Amino acid sequence: MNEFSLLQWPQPRTESEWENSFTLKMFLFQFVNLNSSTFYIAFFLGRFTGRPGAYIRLINRWKLEECHPSGCLIDLCMQMGIIMVLKQTWNNFMELGYPLIQNWWTRRKLRQEHGPNAKASFPQWERDYNLQPMNAYGLFDEYLEMILQFGFTTIFVAAFPLAPLLALLNNIIEIRLDAYKFVTQWRRPLPSQAKDIGIWYGILEGIGILSVITNAFVIAVTSDFIPRLVYAYKYGPCAGQGRAGERCMMGYVNASLSMFRVSDFENTSVPRTDGSDTFGEAVKYCRYRDYRVPPDSPSEPYSYTLQFWHVLAARLAFIIVFEHMVFTIKNLIAYLIPDLPKDLRDRMRREKYLIQEMMYEAELERLQKEKNEKKKNYRAHHNALP
Image 1 (tube, rainbow, N blue to C red):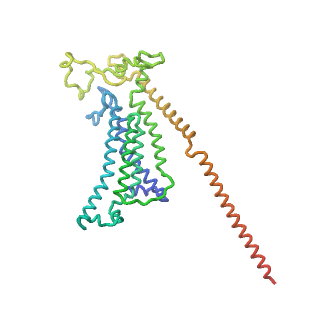
Image 2 (cartoon, rainbow, N blue to C red):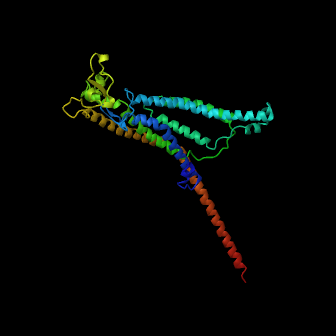
Image 3 (cartoon, helix red, strand yellow):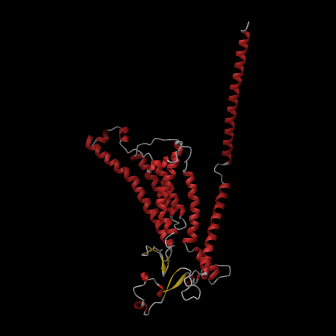
C-alpha cells in the first residue's frame, strides 16, 4: 500500500479534506522519525537494564544500553544540541544548495547550446522561465519545517533551554536565505487564497499539550530534581525542618547509591581483576545508582528501599500538579486574552447584522414586486373580460 492509497483510504469527499489527511499523515511520519531518538533517551534509555547481578539481556547475551553515570539528562541535552545546530544548518544548506546546483546546470546547458553570452541575449521573461519552478509542495515543506522546529523547541525545552534561542537565530538566517531563493533561484510562484492555516492550527495545539506532558516527565523522571527534593526534606540534614538549602544536600550522593557485593556478579559480568593491583586489596563491594537494600540486610537483599517509593510517589505527584497548574494558567490566559479584540468582534457582529438586514430588505422588496406584478396582471385580466 503506497502513500497515495493510504491517503485515499478514508475516502475524503473534498480537496480540503484530502489536504488535511495528507498533512496529518506526513506530520506524524516526520515527527515519529525525528523525535524517536529523543523520546528513547529521555524515557527509555537505562530504565529497563536491571541491576548488577541481574541484568536484563537480549537473547541472554547482550546487556541493554545505560545512561551516562551522571544521568540521562546530559545525553538528552547533547542530542537536542545536535538536532538544533547541525540538523538546522544542514537543512538550510540543502534548501539553498539544491536550486543553486540545478540553475548552474541549466546555465551550463544553455551555454553549450547558444554560446557563452546566451543569458545576456535572452529577454527577462525567458531568463525567469529558465529558473527552477517552485515545488508543488514547497509551501507545505516550509510549514512542516516550522512545525517540527516548534516541536523540538517546546517538547524538551526543560532539558535544553537554549533551543528557543537557536531556533530564533536559525529563523533569522532562513528568512534571508528564503528571500534570496525566491528572488533569484525560483520562478515567481502563483499566489492562492487561503482562509487560515487549516489543520496546522490543530497540530500546534496538540504539540503544545504534548510539550507540557513531556516536560513534566523530563523534570520528574529524567532529571534529579525530585530525588534531590525528597532527600532535602525527608532524609537529609534538614529533614523535618521545612527548609532546604545548600547544606541540606550533604550526603545526597551517598544516599543515591546502593551497595553491591562483587561476588554476586553473574558469570558473564565478572570483572577481569579483583582490584588488588589498584587499591592494594581485593574489592568486595561496589556502588551503583539505585535505591536498593544492601546485600547483607536481614530483609530481602537488593529489594527497593522506602526512599525509592517516596521518590516514585513524589514524581507522580509532581507530574499531576505541574500539568494541572500549567493547563490552568494556559486556559486563564486564553480567557483573559481572547483571539479577537472586543471592538473587532462587535464590528464583525454589526457587519453580519447589516448584511442580514440588507438581505431581508432585498427579499422583502422582491416579494413586494412579485405581489404588485400579480395584482397588475389580475387587473389586466379582469378588464379584458367581456
